[in-house]
Image (tube, rainbow, N blue to C red; front, side):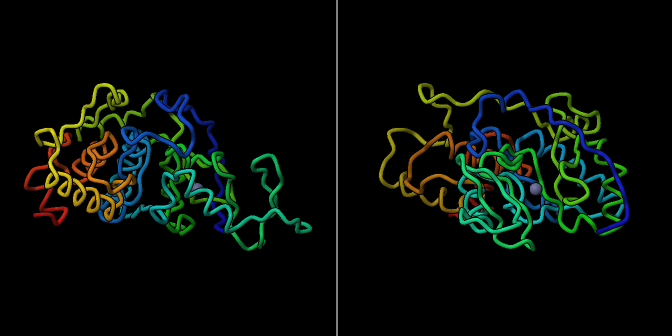
Length: 273
Ligand SMILES: [Zn+2]
């Protein structure tokens, strides 16, 4: 562990649009791709955390420090993702001296002290889309940069000094000035309220009703978006709010217009005809 010390633990102010949202079940319209290596998407974050993270990555890069998530799974985690990871590290059978977690009202024991700790499903800030684990965060140059700069972008650690990689966005809608400037520069706006089922906002540039060939086209679209990590729903050829959000997220990630129209450029980027 690095000798650099820090005491930047700031309590989280939850973005208002996360109130009442079940951890690990964020609706698609609140999620945006997280910035990975070279600006490529890597996982997802709550839109505000995603903007703050991108702003911070760009600033770090200017100082010669590369920031990226450890993996796509170390950004927003669905309940299913958290549960899979949890079950691989914790068991119900008691182990003397093992670290414990409470999940579903019972105690769970960490299988091996060498394994990194993990929050029980639904209790991690990764389930809210506001936490991101920084790749090789304890590398001294990177850690020094983070210590000096995370607050400018509204991030803070949660567990110190054990988890130098785990940062979470703490500022809710009190968006730090540098993040605001980044959002203005990149035309990032507060997402509209959740698309309601009664009034579909799906705008996939197709006439209804959906023919079989359109259905196949949608399937290909879902498949392609899924393979790139933007779509988590069924590959069933149905136009849904989730597909709509996935297209938007993909277009934003590729610096295209913030809408869900599938034009030639989108098709080209997705490898579709
Ligand atoms: Zn973490």
